[in-house]
Length: 286
Image (cartoon, rainbow, N blue to C red; front, side, top):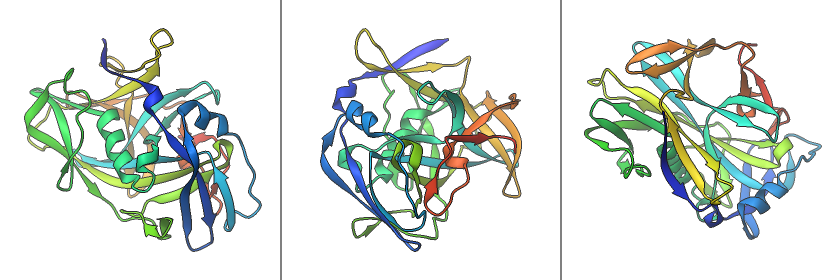
C-alpha cells in the first residue's frame, strides 16, 4: 500500500556551483557564484573532461553527499542501498542514501547527510517508527505527522574511520573525513560519509523501508511516498569486508532474499582514477 507522508515546495531549494582544486594529497572546494535553483543546477550537470585525475582546478555544478551505512544484524554484516530509476541516464541502480547539498549547508555537508538519513531511512517497529540519533544529536522527524514515533526506542548512528586524504571547504577540514570524488558525467563533487547503523536489540520485528520522492506535475509539489509492499531499501551482504553478491530486504525481522541478476550499482561503487569517476554505473556481481 502506498502512503503519502509529506509534501514540499521544490522552489525552496537553492544551491551554488562548486570551485574545486585537487592535488594528489588534498581536495579543496568552495561555493562560487549566485544561488541556483534545482532546475538551474540540473542544467549545469553536463559531462566534462579533466586531463590529470590527480591534479586539477575546475568549477562543478553542485555538491552531493552520500552515506555508506554499515549494519551488523543477526551476526552478519550489511551495507544499506536504495533502488532508483534514472530516466535521464537510462538505468535503474542500487545506490547509497544520498542527496544534493543546499546552499546554506555547503560548508557543513554533514548536516545534509543527517537530513537525508531522516528522510530516506524509515524503520518500522511494532510500537511505531524509530527516530534516529547521531552521537548526542537527534535527527529530524520529517514524517512525524504521518508516521507515529516509537517513544521508547531509536536507532543510533556512529562514525567510521574516514578517508586518508583530507577534504576541505576553503581552509576548514570536513568533519568525519568523507571520501570524495568528482563525477565527470554529471559535473559534480560527491562526498561519501561512512557510518554504522545500530538497531535496538530488544526489537525483533523491524522492517526497513524507503521514502521515495517524485515531482507531481499537477501541483508542482515534491511528494514523499512510502510503499510497504515494495520496501525499495536493500541490505547488501559483506563477509570479511568483501561483498558476497547477496541482497536482502528486512521485513518484520526476517531477511528476505532478493534477485540480483543484471542488477547495477551506482557510480559511487565504480572504479576511481585519482579523484575522478567516469562511469555512470557498475554491475552488482563482477
